[in-house]
Image (cartoon, rainbow, N blue to C red; front, side, top):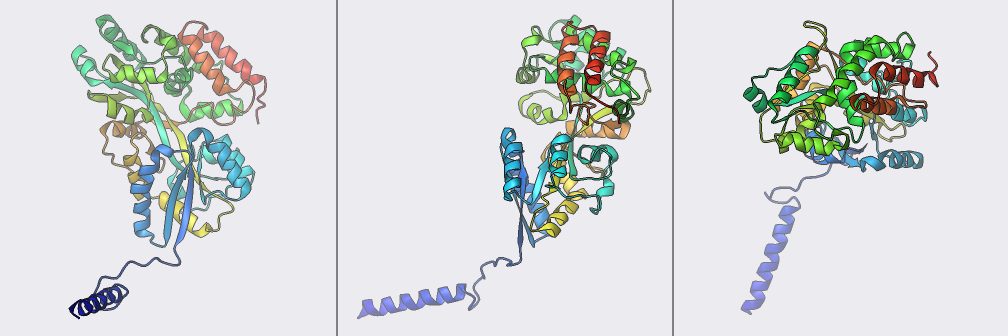
Length: 429
């Protein structure tokens, strides 16, 4: 009898608890899902950024936009273009499309996969240089919101500079004087870069130092409109400077790969590393010494400086999204200061392209972005229009840059060769 009474009491208690949990009594109510909440999906190749988007950027947006949920759905970088095209053709792609710069994304727009964004509120906070990677050739239509750029320069080992009494060079003469002092000391590699993979010579060499000679955007656009040539003095001078690098690179630099150079510099055995800001995260994790950075030196003191502030990542809207209004809301939020600060701090070395001032927690990243206040920004001159034919200018710059560094080509001959290749197919507008 006692057992039966206890069983009935337990059953009544359980039912009371369940009823309270369902809304009766004073028990805490379980959260309810907003039935009108819309989910947006972002397609991206930046799988390394999954945690940043999921744990930092998206929660920040959703805090002020509770009716919109965002999911970050990356694909492996090497598979992204093909996978995205297949999804777009099948109608299964996400609402938001992360955009590579220039021709790949232009192709998506001309195929009708991306929408125009010229009337997006907040777009006025992006410069013409920032927008250039995601515009039609005539500059009249913007189809992806500029998200981030990477900046070129030189990272250096502060301990070695202090030990040898060196200061950051501002002119080309000062730059080579610093390299000579490091070489004469004999204990450190003056300039840490290899040419085995070729792209480093063009990207961290030619495109790093060249804008100061061809005056940034003016020179880049002059190549496109035909008023300048790659055989002009500006390009010969760039290649002459680059040719001098061979005397300061690691022994056997012809066989040194990108990852090898990163490890050599991080080990403390090299003084200066020709860099892109994307290298910041690697060195923060692997270098056990204090890092500094200086921008590409100018020809003469007090010359106007130009930096390669290269447009790298954008984001657009799938023309077939079922949630156009919400997708535009998300992109409008990305034009503002909240996103600019969060993104730039979460991914040091990838900088928001808006004009909002951003205070960065990483001092090396702050050094790079501060150059925007001193110099005029430009982008790599081979990326827009000029690499659509054969020989491809970007690939030619890889070959030619390596050739002048290892002494295969004289700078004057190399410049003539570049222009000859462009003349083979490019018809000026």
